[in-house]
Image 1 (cartoon, rainbow, N blue to C red):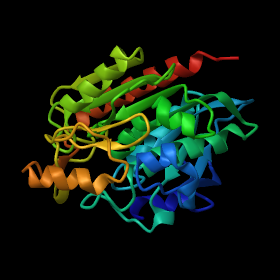
Image 2: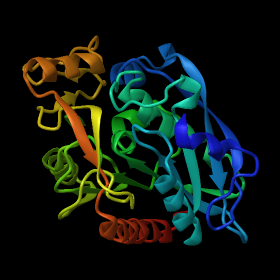
Image 3: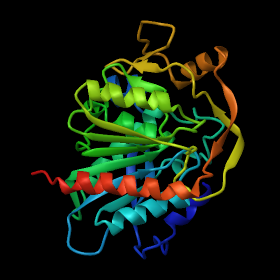
Image 4: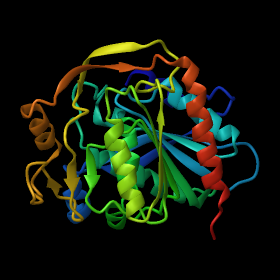
Length: 323
């Protein structure tokens, strides 16, 4: 699991000294969004790991679920968790990889489905809502890269209707992959924020803009920020890194999702419940959109821009306590 293994040591603490509590999250492995939405009982079940960090003082506290990208939980994810807890908001770091025996999805994104990634978010929200130290009316989710796709999809009213989780109040999608989008992208009252660099060569800023605009047209409170001069994962302070093993298709057409979860390939008008993630990726490869290699980080001076944007979003969302 790489850098995420230490998070589950009993003595692990954030940089601000907070020690977390290990949680078990009953989740699932749907093969696609159609199974998650329209055949929920058929989903194979599995338990995930998470660690909950709660600020000092009296609760109950709002909470943000932290969903990592294709490299699993990384130091920057945990640094953001510390920042969030410093703001008086609990943070729950989720490990979607360990129980699935996945080390990385950088060169193979179909080791488990994007529908499963979104379901993980809702399953974690359900567990957190039962905790006495957590305010069940103020649960949000923040995802990075693949995790950004997870939180955007978890905000869908169609997926939420299939789950028993409490409604999320906000999602913050950091440089998300928006290659899957619901035809009807309604998110109800969830506040949505996406942020991505204009030099991102893993995920398409144009797709993200279109995704957020579609949510806004559907009545959602959704905004996007494009950060000039920023690469993928620009919230990391590491030097620019090229990963030749990365398998990406940032300029491929969008694969849409019908209300019942069935995929619609770019060359078709018809939803097909049998299609899975692989079908969309094969289409992109055969059409010539597949690319090997992409860049990470490289703009340490822009990391504070990310932290400021993230903190302003969560403090604003969580200040609006509901009854």
